[in-house]
Amino acid sequence: MTNDIKKLQEKFGTNLREHVVLAPFTTFHIGGPADYFLETHTQDDLAQAIILARELHLPFFILGGGSNVLIGDKGFRGLVIRNTTHTITMKGIKGAISGGIKTGSVFVEADSGVPFNLLVRFTIDEGLQGLEMHLGLPGSVGGAIYMNSKWMDTSSYVGDAVYQARILTPTNEIKSVAKDYFHFQYGTSVLQESGDIILSVVFELHHEDKKTLWDSANKSIVYRKNTQPQGTKTAGCVFKNLTPADAIIAQTPDHTTSSGYLIDHAGGKDLSVGGAKVSPIHANFIVNTGNATASDVLQLIALISERVQEQFGVTLKEEVIRMGEF
Image 1 (spheres, helix red, strand yellow):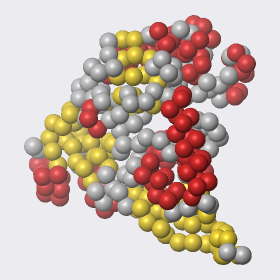
Image 2 (cartoon, one colour):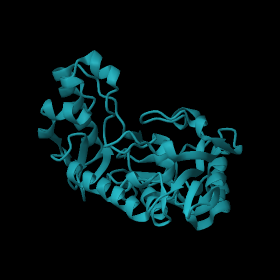
Image 3 (spheres, rainbow, N blue to C red):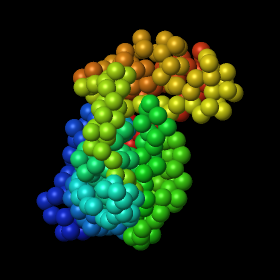
């Protein structure tokens, strides 16, 4: 352990570990070892770990729920910070009670490491509307904001419910920013370019009957079960859907924007490489059948992309984030 790394050890003690295999911390169950691995449980520890890594010029990345990521077979040369911050707080209410009916907004703050499913269940149990359709969404709050995750059967995005967030900037300043700061679009936010790190998020929600919320949430779960692979090792959708404009330009069948449709109709559901296989349930999912490597997945992605390009003239854009050495 170098002198620089000893500074991390002095701060975090035995919580800092060496040569930790990352596969168990991802939904793909794929990935080699990190040189250094640290779990942070509070916003302060998360911020301090990032600041110290930056000061030491130590490569790092933050691992939340482990979905939507493919980690290389050779692992990661640097520090992996597993964000397990876990606090959810009712911040305040803006509104009134009229005729026995609550109106206005309720503000709920969640640490970026909170599993998004846990947050959704909390808000439903509190009778708060705004996130219920995202029940079943894998990953953490921070990851959902980073990707502006979308509920597949509607035009509802996680970013729609954001009020403000607490971030750590690339210059190590901690500040609160409003929703507009993130420039949310399909599958993207400013975080993918800015280098800002989410510490916590405040969501603006509204009062609603719990039964109504659970009915909506359960419909989402049923939809997911009917259209996505369940109980499998997968990182979620591999490719982004097309924009309507791109679909028109490419003249896809019925101007479909669905990457899954294009993969399926290009014969993609028949493809597999090693332990990686295209899901027979949804062609935009790659499943680790038990012993897949990152190399298997990358080769399969290349095959899928080639099939779609040949059949439809469309260049698919990857949604899964690659991290580490391949």
